[in-house]
Length: 164
Length: 360
Image (tube, chains in turn cyan, blue):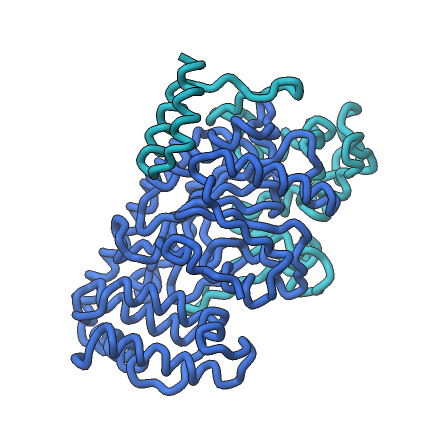
């Protein structure tokens, strides 16, 4: 989506206002948002990404280990500058390439850097399939029977036998 | 023209008003953002890579229980009106459908849909696993999406970091990749001018709101999509619990606001909701925005028991079928047809007359 103001740059800040029962939404790029003074405390709380992106790579000298704005990710060739402009990273590897500034960003965005939710059982490229859990297979089998998908049910029953 | 009748309930089972608290909550949506390890994110990847992603996800999906019979729509091979139709049914985002003012459809942009569940492919993230339920049903909607995530995760290598969790193109989604949204109707809070206070309060507890069509969309017909803002540092169930508690609180505030309106300004409210009904029933030309606002008034009237005989399902159906793409397809005209507002008014009159009868 392009910015409502300059109609050139990508809108990264979506400001919804309610004035006299009228709801309006403004989609602004980082620069136009700053010009319009959108960085009020309320707006910053809603769009910390925008304000972080605006500040990223500016101001205080960074620690030596922090990549400079011009550095690129070896996997995708994306730079911090690209991220600042688009708000999007180039590849999973970017999380390693720009780890320090991203840690800071994640803390500001989410108040944490630690995922505590469901964990994905990662598998190596050589493994075709991760070991299946009997409970999941039983659940799938139940669904397959419920939906009268007997061909799949037979396959699941066989896989369940292997696991058990 | 795409055949939406191939989808169970036409892909709009969520509007049947059968779910919990349907008088206030239209639908509950859950989405999980996932990316394939070893692939460049969408912002920097190539057409070939997007085709590969589409191919491998579709193959994996065909082996699952939940998407085995899925219909696949390639948005990059559909006309604009067909893409808009899918967007109006809340099956694809505006961005994926290429409906942004300067938008084009990205090659490889697709969806897989089966019943209430589906996957958007080559959106901002490689996969956006999503489920849409009628009414206020966070846990039920999540359970289904979680099951599909597990099924797909057994067959696909997802980008996952031991500390950061599921890796996403935008760091605002990293961790669980979970966005839970509840589409709620809040006319009482808007009329009592309490809405901004409530929305500010939500922002302070880490929730956000959007319009009828999700990200970047405007609020129409007093419908607000309330959702979690953060995705990292809390488990999926903690995020859902928190959103659920806050939505229940907002529902209480809305009920209180309605009671205040009925107590302090009964004549004004009664006039307002019947006036809305009268206009819908007899107007000869209706813009989409006007129809949405009038439907909101009637929905309020039905909710507080002032307007009998009109079902929530009827109102939900009107909400979907008076949208520009739906109406123009049903009428067999172009969406830019100048007399669309006249056709919309005629359509609304016909539905109200056949479903509500001549009373009222």
